[in-house]
Amino acid sequence: MSAAERITVRLIMPDRWLEHVAELPSDTTVEAAKAFGIREMLQRASDDPADFYTEFSERRIRDETRTLADVGVTARGVLSIRAYDLGHYPPFRG
Image: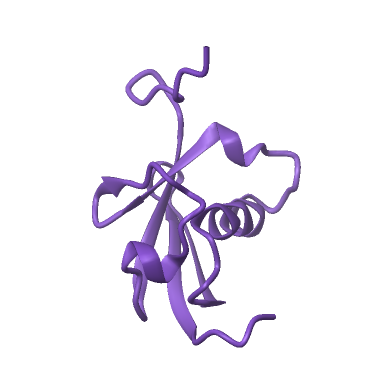
């Protein structure tokens, strides 16, 4: 693991009523935290993290290559992981 400060983060999937509390280095990318949360909460590795998006402080994180520290996640911060659906479309890449 990294030498960065470790912070306790609540990873939640509010649409599925799931929650996982994890201690992660502050230099963990949002993308890595999301993938970790999906594996831990859904208890399987078959879900594609690209089918989900993340929110912090009720705002979507568009650049998931940023670290938890860059986004402003501090101890006991909450990252929401939500599946793309009819109300939330995946980014167009065309």
